[in-house]
Length: 313
Image 1 (cartoon, rainbow, N blue to C red):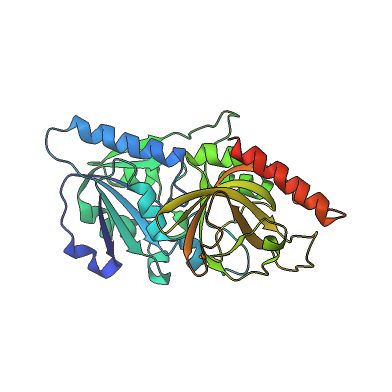
Image 2: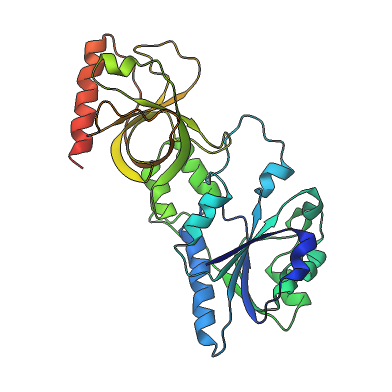
């Protein structure tokens, strides 16, 4: 997969012919997106000449430009690099990362299509059923079919989950907020992940034989799973570990006012110091709600049961 990061004013430097194109934010690449990529690949295989599949996406995410981001968490991807790593799993030839700013946000649908999409000389455009482009998303598949007769238009119907719900980034965000991690992971096609850095904590876990690392998320606007205890996989310095993660306030032993992310890693040397390391957390399974215990002894007993359950996986 070739990745090209560019701006609106630099697009005319790119030269492609007979391409097969899709466009979108693709936040939290999921099974609905995969359906689009598979269709592009299928179309490409029908041609005798080399017809490149091209995906156009944006950085930063349009929401961060169009909406005033406060303390709310919205994104399913940590950053553009994580998104690109996920896209490498799919059969897309080229990804164009277009810088998104206020100027691009105000481009009309016609100018967007003429100045951006037509740069790649598309013969086929593949889009989801609810996709839109241009100012206020005024451009859609009907707009293309009515104005560009020489381009083949392919509409991808909604992908459904086992509950017959339409798979979308919005629905996955809602599932994460509701604590239904399994549903979210199933729709993503892989475990939800979070990038962060190990920071200094209180060190209380060591006193009860459950040492933890404290994580500061890389992206303050990325969705964090619902408060509770999770079975996780952690990547640190290219080494995989398993453990259990508590998201919340540790109410039994602290009066924390701010939510924290703490991970107890299994089967690791006690003298290893992960402080300041970058980590990637994969949330494999929700175990239970966070709970305030009357005594620390009861907390320790529960932690042992949690660990036994995780190690049995």
